[in-house]
Length: 66
Image (tube, rainbow, N blue to C red; front, side, top):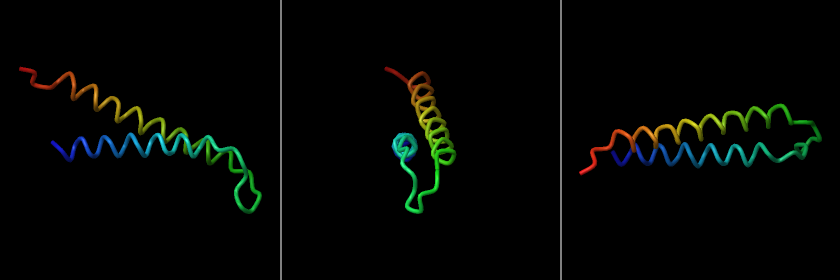
């Protein structure tokens, strides 16, 4: 079960990182506009955060509480 929590934590951190990275609006080193790619990265990050939060809620609701 420890690997499950580690995987959920990694998904959450990577998702938040993609959202933060995608929110940067400056052009790349060659001066090209990368807003479409950054928007896609933010969407992928939002999906990863959503999946990890959904996994946490499901784990909480299905836990064997004493």
